[in-house]
Length: 282
Length: 293
Image 1 (cartoon, chains in turn orange, blue):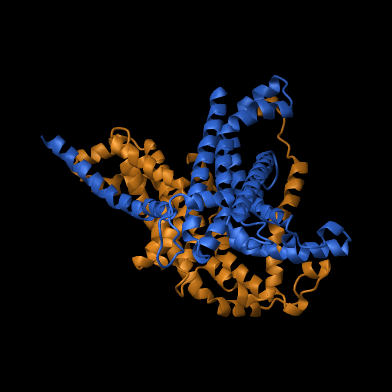
Image 2: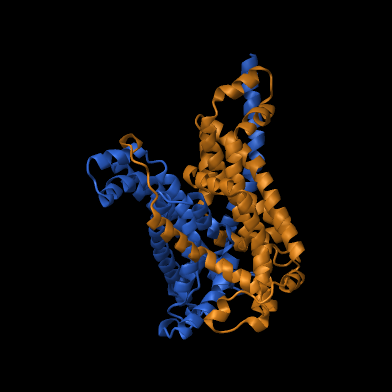
């Protein structure tokens, strides 16, 4: 286009349509914020009242919501479960992806292993749920540790696929050179291969983080007997205690959404990149 | 002899690295699958003793109206949802990839629904459906939105659908955008020089070149929508009158608390086989389309 000497002009019509379309995304968030700040007495049935800003920006609902839902404990659980899952996923799934990816071209056994693990992607949680509850209860894992182990298994198929796919970009010569220098293959992996898979670590971290942070079903069925909750699970468990006090409930929802929204604002590029990368490579 | 020994060592190290991981995978994926399949042949209630009943659970599934209804709801939801999600996100991706202002901000905003948890999003929409929309209906005297759609047996599934689509569009749009970016600009230039119109360019160039991404998105969104659970939990709890009971929700509800461990295990086995079959068929079909081009 440049060759023709014409300047690329902005499509203002589409820009405006897209800006208006953002309302579909932002309206529910706007409602959450204003309801979370309002008093129950401010909740009226007419449209203007429902959409208006709160008369004062008081944080009382939030303080109460934190107390009712045991917010800090739920937040700590969510952070620990997601954090540990991410770290272990990167460590363990990258090893699996590496070993399988490097050997599957030459060895039937590894090729079988690859399909065995990757086909786990199609196993719905619904079929594993009931036996897993029994299993984790028997071996004393009906707690956050059990949830982390399960996540490591659930995300293994996609992550192994991503890592072993990415491995094609890393020439075999790299590790052969290290091995000739006398390094063991264990050492070679950590010194040479692991650092080179860095872009994939970011993708795996993002995909695993989004999945585990928002997951309800696994903690719901595995930790239901214990005192522990996660942020989303706390919303479900305390639903009855919110009763018809929607302001309290929405303050709690907003509190539960804020950590991931902050994370998104800070690493928006990495998150969008990671999700796109993961889906396209996978 | 040294290289041979080091090769042996390497093989052994690799085995030592992979064996614990495979055991972990087996214990928490394959083993429960086998246990589930085993219980599906029993009348186990989740506690106490049980007997083998052979294939009776599977036969009973066929005549259980509640199970049939959950399959009808889930498939209706997944089919309509997948079509809507893919049409909307393709259009959105085309728009977000064109010459617009504030491109990255707009992309950032449209992606937000994907990072929010389905359960909480469900609670927020539940309030909007129950209070805000009827309030709008009353104020402006629009009769068909004066009652909450979640309370209507025939319409509640549309409420669940709106929330499901709202969330799923975000993810699929990003995938379509990265697909659009793989199409080189000179292909478009060439078609312009040949005098192709917008629609013709879209059909003859954009769509075929996007085929791999359409395939990913179809498989992804069908699978996710078939497994719908969180939104049901927060929007309707399967109601009203079990009209929005998804397969996952029914298995959870009746298998965990309802004393139907064995029966719902059979349901889960059927559900698993269906998901695998559908995914394989979808991938085969879209792969063929890709080859033809």
